[in-house]
Length: 215
Image (tube, rainbow, N blue to C red; front, side, top):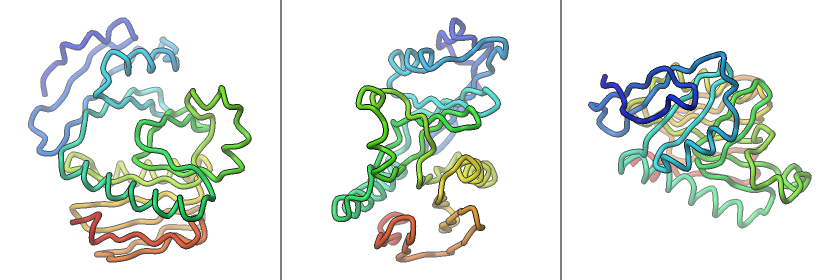
């Protein structure tokens, strides 16, 4: 682990480090000064300064920074987004968002799922000017796709947090394990080596081709 030279100190960061030896992507963790109120403006400014990085804030106030993914993970994310986009255009039941979209969850966290979907009536209830800001809601459906640096236990914890904050469905795609987990308030369905999966009733008529996503 190497110390980061990035000038995060003025944002209340006490130290930063990252691992240069990840194969597909790496994770930078920042130790925050808990006395500082870490605002949306801070995150917006960090994003402006470092547009290649993705910033999230945990419910405990920790800032998590993820650099760009490797080619394989990027291709899988694109396949997932394209398939969901085609379904969403056909059905028109809601709005689809990519990983650059931040959501304020009720527990205080600010997260950016790889792909998220919000039912249309909820979107229409948000004033147009407010849609330029981080969303003050939890998506109805979220998808997270693992990269080689991710730990399944941490991702499962994140899925449970989405559901606890109001998501109707949180989908975890574990690439190395070739497993898809569909987390709901009623429990979790685990599908090993899936080829095609349905996502009713949350996404009516949505069937995803996992041979393509997990290729």
